[in-house]
Length: 146
Image (cartoon, rainbow, N blue to C red; front, side, top):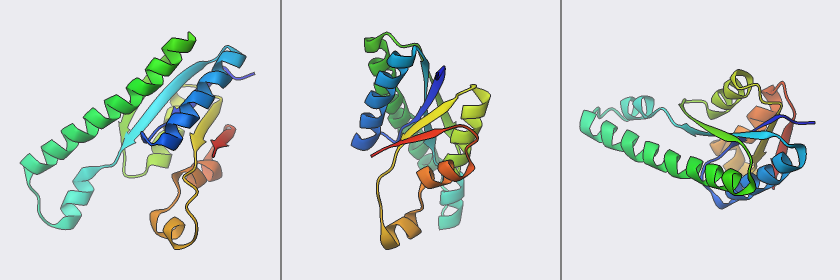
């Protein structure tokens, strides 16, 4: 049924559970996995804060890329252990949901499997929900793992 499952990760324990669920589903459907991590666009954040320091910006970007590699390595390892074909993508965007949707389209993914952190009330309003945004705008099915 599914051929290519996109699994966004933020490195959290919830995301790791979603990865394991995605691997099981991919194995069941003999599908492949595409993992994605979206790094926030720190240029905008640093410019907004008013203190542009190229050295600080470079350090922040290097740390973010190292974290991304670690998160995506978890997906690759889980897929390899299950014998599932896997590729990964690291994007930089101020709108993670948009990068997730564009990657799903570009890679021909027919399912997006992601987690929800389950924030409620004011926290949900202030922090937003990338999962909700993906659900709202996706053209392919979205499976949310709690």
